[in-house]
Length: 481
Image (tube, rainbow, N blue to C red; front, side, top):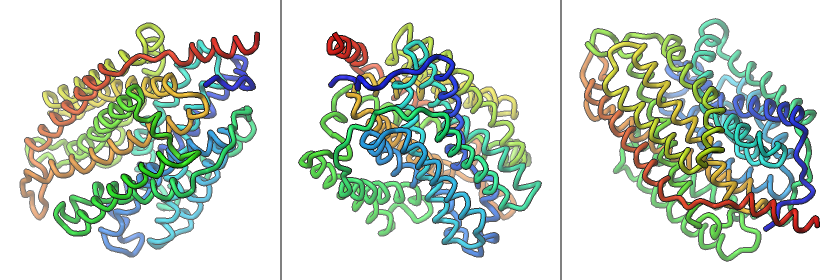
């Protein structure tokens, strides 16, 4: 497949502005995932519901994001990436506005789902980078956009905690309305509408099938600890989701214009990169679950660090910024040694970060060091995966393929959240009326996170190197001649 000859890269100054706008949008969308964590404990009172029902306020956004990524990617390939970016931003405005006006559970959940659907902005923005940036800027642009996943989440914790403590809790969502409105304007006015629509039919049945299957599996994983892994509801959703996904796969192989071209997805470079994405996504979420809890455990346990929610968020924030700071480092690594080895280095650094956490967990600054090391690894790894995908798929599949890779990262984060919760509740100690995880449970979490990261290194080592972009440029040059 040749590259679309009508797509032209921008001048460096214009391209930098486009990259800044897309990174801002990606960071704003990612921030929604951690927006309500600081007020999670009081959500049942605020929404007049039970704690079990209130937990869906967080889960709904994660599920919406997982479903949105591959679907938004395919829509971008069919109708143009800039249009889908604007639509994702509008979804964020609407979802944030609904949440800002909500005082009960159902409107809040609908708004949070729409906020999650806006996560489709990130894979579409990444796939657009290749089309609008000069070759010497592309790696850095993709690395920066990939880092927004971690930056938005890390900034969201202390920012949301401060807003929730200083203002009415609805201010969290009015803040997100403002960010989303700025996204709409900046994307509509400053991101070029390149002629990258390839036409074709949108696979509605495939989109519904994928959504139903994913929701079944991810809800079972997310709620397994709460409901019980042997509970009929958990088993039913998990088995049902897997069956639907298998049927979806058979349908996708037999239909024209599928939502996801599985023949491309099972090619070794794409398949192995997506498996590595699950491992790295697991590693990113594991520290996001474990470290804040350890920071907030009372000091009376002998190992807890007694930090408030705001203090814990501030200790975690530098980790997210490390992802952004390492974007140029990742870019240079990809240029010099290739994205495959860069992914191996990133996963390896992530594993080392967990080992640092295993050894150093006696003071907040020690966990800060461990978090920064792990986050640097995530930043390097996340930056290299979209490049591996884009090098391995034809241009008309770029958005969909990067969306599937984003989905695999979401699967990794969902599995990590469930596994870490299970490990933390497997060994507890009673403090007053509360059951708290033991020090050994936290150490086990660090070891499991390290193991997942090193599995990612092993998977990345087997990824074949593909130079499709160079081949495409040669084809385009030949066609032009």
